[in-house]
Amino acid sequence: MKDYKSLYSRFLAARPEELHFAAHSHHFWPDVTREAQLKVWDDAAEYNDRKWEHIFKTIVPQVQSHIARILNLKRPDMIALAPNTHDLLVRLFSELLTRPQLKLLTTDSEFHSFARQLRRWEEVHSHLQVTRLEGLELLTQRESFLQKFESSLAGQDVVFVSQVFFNSGLALKIEDIERWVNKAGPQTIFIIDGYHGFAALPTDLSRLEGRVFYLGGGYKYVQAGEGVGFMVVPQGPWRPVITGWFAEYAQLSSPVGGGVGYSHDGMAFWGATMDPSGWYRFNAVWDLFASLGITIEAIHQHVRSLQHGFLQSDPFRALRPLYTQPLHHHGHFLTFEASDVNQATQMREELLKKQIYIDQRGARLRFGFGMYQDLTDVQALVKRLT
Image (cartoon, rainbow, N blue to C red; front, side, top):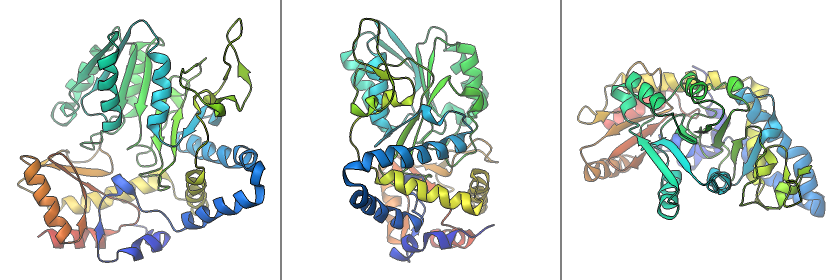
Protein backbone atom coordinates (compact mmCIF):
# COMPACT_ATOMS: atom_id res chain seq x y z
CA MET A 1 0.00 0.00 0.00
CA LYS A 2 1.39 3.40 -0.97
CA ASP A 3 1.71 6.13 1.64
CA TYR A 4 -0.01 9.33 0.55
CA LYS A 5 0.00 10.97 3.99
CA SER A 6 2.82 13.36 3.22
CA LEU A 7 0.53 15.11 0.73
CA TYR A 8 -1.85 16.10 3.56
CA SER A 9 0.53 17.29 6.29
CA ARG A 10 -1.35 20.51 7.11
CA PHE A 11 -4.77 18.90 7.58
CA LEU A 12 -3.28 16.00 9.54
CA ALA A 13 -1.35 18.33 11.83
CA ALA A 14 -4.43 20.43 12.62
CA ARG A 15 -6.13 17.69 14.71
CA PRO A 16 -3.48 15.05 15.29
CA GLU A 17 -5.41 13.07 17.92
CA GLU A 18 -8.58 12.73 15.89
CA LEU A 19 -9.28 9.79 13.59
CA HIS A 20 -11.19 11.37 10.73
CA PHE A 21 -13.20 8.70 8.91
CA ALA A 22 -15.51 10.99 6.98
CA ALA A 23 -13.67 11.30 3.67
CA HIS A 24 -17.01 10.78 1.93
CA SER A 25 -18.32 13.94 3.60
CA HIS A 26 -15.31 16.24 3.47
CA HIS A 27 -12.07 14.72 2.26
CA PHE A 28 -8.88 16.33 3.56
CA TRP A 29 -7.21 18.69 1.10
CA PRO A 30 -3.64 18.13 -0.11
CA ASP A 31 -1.14 20.78 0.95
CA VAL A 32 -0.92 22.18 -2.59
CA THR A 33 -4.41 23.61 -2.25
CA ARG A 34 -3.13 26.24 0.19
CA GLU A 35 -0.74 27.62 -2.40
CA ALA A 36 -3.56 27.49 -4.94
CA GLN A 37 -5.76 29.55 -2.64
CA LEU A 38 -3.06 32.21 -2.41
CA LYS A 39 -2.65 32.08 -6.19
CA VAL A 40 -6.28 33.21 -6.57
CA TRP A 41 -5.44 36.43 -4.71
CA ASP A 42 -2.21 36.96 -6.62
CA ASP A 43 -3.94 36.49 -9.97
CA ALA A 44 -6.69 38.92 -8.97
CA ALA A 45 -4.02 41.52 -8.26
CA GLU A 46 -2.04 40.79 -11.41
CA TYR A 47 -4.91 40.59 -13.88
CA ASN A 48 -7.39 42.90 -12.15
CA ASP A 49 -10.07 43.86 -14.73
CA ARG A 50 -8.75 41.16 -17.06
CA LYS A 51 -9.14 38.43 -14.44
CA TRP A 52 -12.09 36.63 -16.02
CA GLU A 53 -10.39 36.64 -19.41
CA HIS A 54 -7.47 34.81 -17.80
CA ILE A 55 -9.74 32.43 -15.88
CA PHE A 56 -11.77 31.42 -18.93
CA LYS A 57 -8.70 31.12 -21.11
CA THR A 58 -6.51 29.17 -18.67
CA ILE A 59 -8.12 27.99 -15.43
CA VAL A 60 -11.49 26.73 -16.70
CA PRO A 61 -10.07 24.67 -19.61
CA GLN A 62 -7.71 22.99 -17.13
CA VAL A 63 -10.62 22.02 -14.88
CA GLN A 64 -12.64 20.73 -17.81
CA SER A 65 -9.68 18.75 -19.16
CA HIS A 66 -9.07 17.08 -15.79
CA ILE A 67 -12.74 16.10 -15.51
CA ALA A 68 -12.80 14.80 -19.08
CA ARG A 69 -9.65 12.75 -18.46
CA ILE A 70 -11.04 11.21 -15.26
CA LEU A 71 -14.28 10.23 -17.04
CA ASN A 72 -12.66 9.35 -20.40
CA LEU A 73 -14.56 12.00 -22.35
CA LYS A 74 -13.57 13.62 -25.65
CA ARG A 75 -15.46 16.92 -25.29
CA PRO A 76 -14.25 19.00 -22.31
CA ASP A 77 -16.23 21.94 -23.68
CA MET A 78 -19.45 20.06 -22.86
CA ILE A 79 -18.73 20.39 -19.13
CA ALA A 80 -20.54 23.19 -17.30
CA LEU A 81 -19.21 24.55 -14.00
CA ALA A 82 -21.06 26.14 -11.08
CA PRO A 83 -20.58 26.71 -7.33
CA ASN A 84 -22.53 23.50 -6.64
CA THR A 85 -24.48 20.82 -8.47
CA HIS A 86 -27.82 22.11 -7.20
CA ASP A 87 -27.39 25.30 -9.24
CA LEU A 88 -26.91 23.20 -12.35
CA LEU A 89 -29.91 20.99 -11.62
CA VAL A 90 -32.15 24.00 -11.09
CA ARG A 91 -31.09 25.43 -14.43
CA LEU A 92 -31.65 22.09 -16.19
CA PHE A 93 -35.10 21.59 -14.70
CA SER A 94 -36.06 25.18 -15.44
CA GLU A 95 -36.14 24.00 -19.05
CA LEU A 96 -37.57 20.53 -18.48
CA LEU A 97 -40.48 21.76 -16.38
CA THR A 98 -41.74 23.92 -19.25
CA ARG A 99 -42.95 20.74 -20.96
CA PRO A 100 -46.73 20.13 -20.77
CA GLN A 101 -46.07 16.75 -19.13
CA LEU A 102 -43.00 15.42 -17.38
CA LYS A 103 -42.71 11.85 -16.12
CA LEU A 104 -39.67 11.21 -13.96
CA LEU A 105 -38.21 7.94 -12.68
CA THR A 106 -35.90 7.99 -9.66
CA THR A 107 -35.31 6.28 -6.30
CA ASP A 108 -36.08 7.06 -2.69
CA SER A 109 -32.32 7.20 -1.97
CA GLU A 110 -31.24 10.35 -3.78
CA PHE A 111 -29.32 13.12 -2.03
CA HIS A 112 -31.26 15.52 0.24
CA SER A 113 -30.84 18.54 -2.00
CA PHE A 114 -32.42 16.95 -5.07
CA ALA A 115 -34.99 14.94 -3.10
CA ARG A 116 -36.21 18.06 -1.30
CA GLN A 117 -36.29 20.13 -4.49
CA LEU A 118 -38.19 17.40 -6.32
CA ARG A 119 -40.85 17.24 -3.60
CA ARG A 120 -41.27 21.01 -3.83
CA TRP A 121 -41.61 20.88 -7.60
CA GLU A 122 -44.30 18.21 -7.18
CA GLU A 123 -46.21 20.59 -4.90
CA VAL A 124 -46.41 23.31 -7.54
CA HIS A 125 -46.31 21.43 -10.86
CA SER A 126 -49.30 19.15 -11.33
CA HIS A 127 -47.94 17.95 -14.68
CA LEU A 128 -44.88 16.43 -12.96
CA GLN A 129 -45.36 12.72 -12.27
CA VAL A 130 -42.65 11.02 -10.20
CA THR A 131 -42.03 7.29 -9.75
CA ARG A 132 -39.68 6.35 -6.89
CA LEU A 133 -38.16 2.89 -6.54
CA GLU A 134 -36.60 1.61 -3.32
CA GLY A 135 -32.86 2.11 -3.56
CA LEU A 136 -32.00 -0.18 -0.65
CA GLU A 137 -33.30 -3.11 -2.68
CA LEU A 138 -29.85 -3.08 -4.29
CA LEU A 139 -28.55 -4.59 -1.04
CA THR A 140 -30.65 -7.73 -0.89
CA GLN A 141 -32.13 -8.12 -4.37
CA ARG A 142 -29.70 -6.48 -6.75
CA GLU A 143 -30.83 -8.17 -9.95
CA SER A 144 -34.45 -7.65 -9.02
CA PHE A 145 -33.83 -3.92 -8.54
CA LEU A 146 -32.00 -3.61 -11.85
CA GLN A 147 -34.82 -5.40 -13.67
CA LYS A 148 -37.52 -3.41 -11.91
CA PHE A 149 -35.79 -0.17 -12.85
CA GLU A 150 -35.50 -1.28 -16.47
CA SER A 151 -39.17 -2.31 -16.54
CA SER A 152 -40.16 1.12 -15.23
CA LEU A 153 -38.44 3.05 -18.04
CA ALA A 154 -41.35 2.87 -20.47
CA GLY A 155 -42.96 6.26 -20.95
CA GLN A 156 -40.50 8.13 -18.74
CA ASP A 157 -39.27 11.53 -19.90
CA VAL A 158 -36.49 11.88 -17.34
CA VAL A 159 -34.45 9.42 -15.27
CA PHE A 160 -32.48 10.65 -12.26
CA VAL A 161 -30.32 8.12 -10.43
CA SER A 162 -27.14 8.09 -8.34
CA GLN A 163 -24.01 6.21 -9.34
CA VAL A 164 -23.41 5.62 -5.61
CA PHE A 165 -26.29 6.15 -3.18
CA PHE A 166 -25.34 8.67 -0.49
CA ASN A 167 -27.29 6.97 2.32
CA SER A 168 -25.83 3.49 1.91
CA GLY A 169 -22.77 3.46 -0.35
CA LEU A 170 -24.44 0.93 -2.64
CA ALA A 171 -23.30 1.47 -6.21
CA LEU A 172 -24.50 0.95 -9.74
CA LYS A 173 -22.13 -0.10 -12.47
CA ILE A 174 -21.87 2.23 -15.44
CA GLU A 175 -22.78 -0.82 -17.52
CA ASP A 176 -26.09 -1.04 -15.63
CA ILE A 177 -26.91 2.56 -16.48
CA GLU A 178 -25.79 2.09 -20.10
CA ARG A 179 -28.19 -0.82 -20.43
CA TRP A 180 -31.02 1.40 -19.21
CA VAL A 181 -30.05 4.21 -21.58
CA ASN A 182 -30.11 1.81 -24.51
CA LYS A 183 -33.43 0.37 -23.38
CA ALA A 184 -35.11 3.76 -22.94
CA GLY A 185 -33.94 5.25 -26.20
CA PRO A 186 -32.88 8.81 -27.15
CA GLN A 187 -36.18 10.42 -26.11
CA THR A 188 -35.47 9.85 -22.39
CA ILE A 189 -33.16 12.27 -20.59
CA PHE A 190 -30.79 10.53 -18.18
CA ILE A 191 -29.27 12.44 -15.27
CA ILE A 192 -26.61 10.63 -13.21
CA ASP A 193 -25.67 11.96 -9.80
CA GLY A 194 -22.02 10.97 -9.78
CA TYR A 195 -20.94 12.89 -6.69
CA HIS A 196 -19.99 9.78 -4.70
CA GLY A 197 -18.51 8.06 -7.73
CA PHE A 198 -16.43 10.77 -9.40
CA ALA A 199 -12.71 10.56 -8.53
CA ALA A 200 -13.46 7.55 -6.30
CA LEU A 201 -14.68 4.67 -8.47
CA PRO A 202 -13.03 4.19 -11.88
CA THR A 203 -15.69 5.61 -14.22
CA ASP A 204 -15.59 5.41 -18.00
CA LEU A 205 -18.37 7.44 -19.62
CA SER A 206 -17.02 7.18 -23.15
CA ARG A 207 -19.92 5.06 -24.41
CA LEU A 208 -22.44 7.40 -22.76
CA GLU A 209 -20.84 10.64 -23.90
CA GLY A 210 -23.36 12.90 -25.59
CA ARG A 211 -26.25 10.83 -24.22
CA VAL A 212 -26.44 11.59 -20.48
CA PHE A 213 -26.02 14.36 -17.94
CA TYR A 214 -23.46 13.55 -15.25
CA LEU A 215 -23.11 15.61 -12.06
CA GLY A 216 -20.18 15.80 -9.68
CA GLY A 217 -18.19 18.18 -7.54
CA GLY A 218 -15.14 19.01 -5.51
CA TYR A 219 -16.25 18.69 -1.91
CA LYS A 220 -15.59 14.98 -1.45
CA TYR A 221 -13.20 12.72 -3.33
CA VAL A 222 -11.99 15.48 -5.64
CA GLN A 223 -10.36 16.97 -2.51
CA ALA A 224 -10.74 20.57 -3.64
CA GLY A 225 -13.37 21.75 -1.18
CA GLU A 226 -16.38 23.94 -1.82
CA GLY A 227 -17.26 25.85 -4.95
CA VAL A 228 -16.64 23.17 -7.60
CA GLY A 229 -19.80 21.74 -9.12
CA PHE A 230 -19.89 20.42 -12.65
CA MET A 231 -22.29 18.84 -15.12
CA VAL A 232 -21.39 16.89 -18.23
CA VAL A 233 -23.93 17.97 -20.84
CA PRO A 234 -25.17 15.97 -23.85
CA GLN A 235 -25.59 17.68 -27.19
CA GLY A 236 -28.50 20.16 -27.19
CA PRO A 237 -29.75 22.56 -28.12
CA TRP A 238 -30.49 23.54 -24.51
CA ARG A 239 -32.29 26.72 -23.44
CA PRO A 240 -32.67 26.74 -19.63
CA VAL A 241 -35.13 29.35 -18.39
CA ILE A 242 -32.87 30.23 -15.47
CA THR A 243 -29.70 31.58 -17.02
CA GLY A 244 -26.86 34.03 -16.41
CA TRP A 245 -24.32 36.16 -18.20
CA PHE A 246 -21.68 33.42 -18.29
CA ALA A 247 -23.95 31.60 -20.75
CA GLU A 248 -23.16 34.41 -23.21
CA TYR A 249 -19.41 33.87 -22.97
CA ALA A 250 -19.25 31.86 -26.19
CA GLN A 251 -20.77 31.77 -29.66
CA LEU A 252 -24.54 31.94 -29.30
CA SER A 253 -27.41 30.38 -31.18
CA SER A 254 -30.84 32.01 -31.05
CA PRO A 255 -34.23 30.56 -31.97
CA VAL A 256 -35.74 31.47 -35.31
CA GLY A 257 -37.11 34.98 -35.04
CA GLY A 258 -34.63 36.09 -32.41
CA GLY A 259 -34.78 35.74 -28.66
CA VAL A 260 -32.23 34.89 -25.99
CA GLY A 261 -29.21 33.13 -27.41
CA TYR A 262 -27.41 30.15 -25.85
CA SER A 263 -24.03 28.61 -26.31
CA HIS A 264 -23.76 25.48 -28.44
CA ASP A 265 -21.84 23.60 -25.73
CA GLY A 266 -21.93 23.11 -21.96
CA MET A 267 -21.71 26.88 -21.51
CA ALA A 268 -25.49 26.99 -22.05
CA PHE A 269 -25.85 25.92 -18.39
CA TRP A 270 -23.42 28.38 -16.86
CA GLY A 271 -24.76 30.98 -14.45
CA ALA A 272 -23.24 34.23 -13.24
CA THR A 273 -20.26 35.58 -11.33
CA MET A 274 -18.87 33.10 -8.82
CA ASP A 275 -15.81 32.54 -6.64
CA PRO A 276 -13.17 30.83 -8.81
CA SER A 277 -10.95 29.69 -5.92
CA GLY A 278 -12.33 26.15 -5.98
CA TRP A 279 -11.21 25.78 -9.58
CA TYR A 280 -7.67 26.77 -8.62
CA ARG A 281 -7.64 24.21 -5.80
CA PHE A 282 -9.08 21.56 -8.13
CA ASN A 283 -6.34 22.11 -10.70
CA ALA A 284 -3.63 22.07 -8.03
CA VAL A 285 -4.77 18.67 -6.74
CA TRP A 286 -5.10 16.96 -10.09
CA ASP A 287 -1.99 18.54 -11.57
CA LEU A 288 -0.14 17.09 -8.58
CA PHE A 289 -1.71 13.65 -8.93
CA ALA A 290 -0.95 13.60 -12.65
CA SER A 291 2.69 14.51 -11.99
CA LEU A 292 2.96 11.68 -9.43
CA GLY A 293 1.17 9.14 -11.62
CA ILE A 294 -1.70 8.77 -9.13
CA THR A 295 -4.71 7.35 -10.97
CA ILE A 296 -8.31 6.79 -9.93
CA GLU A 297 -7.61 3.06 -10.07
CA ALA A 298 -4.73 3.47 -7.60
CA ILE A 299 -6.87 5.58 -5.27
CA HIS A 300 -9.68 3.04 -5.46
CA GLN A 301 -7.39 0.14 -4.64
CA HIS A 302 -5.91 2.07 -1.70
CA VAL A 303 -9.37 2.70 -0.25
CA ARG A 304 -10.50 -0.88 -0.86
CA SER A 305 -7.49 -2.12 1.13
CA LEU A 306 -8.46 0.15 4.01
CA GLN A 307 -12.08 -1.01 3.89
CA HIS A 308 -11.13 -4.69 3.86
CA GLY A 309 -8.76 -4.12 6.76
CA PHE A 310 -11.59 -2.53 8.73
CA LEU A 311 -14.09 -5.27 7.93
CA GLN A 312 -11.72 -8.00 9.11
CA SER A 313 -12.44 -6.78 12.64
CA ASP A 314 -16.16 -7.52 12.16
CA PRO A 315 -17.25 -4.14 13.59
CA PHE A 316 -20.69 -3.29 15.00
CA ARG A 317 -22.21 -6.74 15.22
CA ALA A 318 -25.32 -5.21 16.80
CA LEU A 319 -25.93 -2.99 13.74
CA ARG A 320 -27.15 -3.84 10.26
CA PRO A 321 -24.37 -3.54 7.66
CA LEU A 322 -25.55 -1.98 4.40
CA TYR A 323 -23.01 -3.69 2.20
CA THR A 324 -22.23 -7.14 0.87
CA GLN A 325 -18.82 -8.74 0.71
CA PRO A 326 -16.75 -8.69 -1.34
CA LEU A 327 -17.28 -4.98 -2.06
CA HIS A 328 -17.73 -5.27 -5.82
CA HIS A 329 -20.51 -2.69 -6.16
CA HIS A 330 -19.84 -0.20 -3.41
CA GLY A 331 -18.55 3.30 -2.85
CA HIS A 332 -15.77 4.56 -0.59
CA PHE A 333 -17.78 4.59 2.63
CA LEU A 334 -19.38 1.83 4.68
CA THR A 335 -22.79 2.26 6.30
CA PHE A 336 -24.19 0.66 9.43
CA GLU A 337 -27.85 1.00 10.39
CA ALA A 338 -28.97 1.30 14.02
CA SER A 339 -32.40 0.37 15.33
CA ASP A 340 -33.45 4.04 15.36
CA VAL A 341 -32.11 7.59 15.21
CA ASN A 342 -31.62 7.80 18.96
CA GLN A 343 -29.35 4.77 19.05
CA ALA A 344 -27.33 6.07 16.09
CA THR A 345 -26.98 9.52 17.68
CA GLN A 346 -25.84 8.02 20.98
CA MET A 347 -23.26 5.85 19.23
CA ARG A 348 -21.89 8.76 17.24
CA GLU A 349 -21.56 10.84 20.41
CA GLU A 350 -19.66 7.99 22.05
CA LEU A 351 -17.34 7.82 19.05
CA LEU A 352 -16.69 11.55 19.26
CA LYS A 353 -15.62 11.13 22.89
CA LYS A 354 -13.04 8.65 21.59
CA GLN A 355 -11.97 11.24 18.99
CA ILE A 356 -13.39 9.22 16.12
CA TYR A 357 -15.11 11.45 13.59
CA ILE A 358 -17.73 9.92 11.30
CA ASP A 359 -21.10 11.20 10.17
CA GLN A 360 -24.72 10.19 10.56
CA ARG A 361 -27.71 10.09 8.22
CA GLY A 362 -30.79 9.40 10.32
CA ALA A 363 -30.33 5.95 11.86
CA ARG A 364 -27.31 5.24 9.67
CA LEU A 365 -23.64 5.72 10.58
CA ARG A 366 -21.20 6.24 7.72
CA PHE A 367 -17.47 5.43 7.83
CA GLY A 368 -15.50 6.95 4.96
CA PHE A 369 -11.98 6.05 3.86
CA GLY A 370 -9.53 8.22 1.97
CA MET A 371 -6.02 8.77 0.69
CA TYR A 372 -4.82 10.46 3.87
CA GLN A 373 -5.24 7.21 5.81
CA ASP A 374 -3.21 4.00 5.96
CA LEU A 375 -3.64 0.66 7.68
CA THR A 376 -2.20 2.00 10.93
CA ASP A 377 -5.12 4.43 11.07
CA VAL A 378 -7.56 1.57 10.50
CA GLN A 379 -5.89 -0.42 13.24
CA ALA A 380 -6.11 2.57 15.58
CA LEU A 381 -9.80 2.93 14.71
CA VAL A 382 -10.51 -0.71 15.49
CA LYS A 383 -8.62 -0.44 18.78
CA ARG A 384 -10.64 2.58 19.89
CA LEU A 385 -13.88 0.88 18.92
CA THR A 386 -13.19 -2.16 21.13
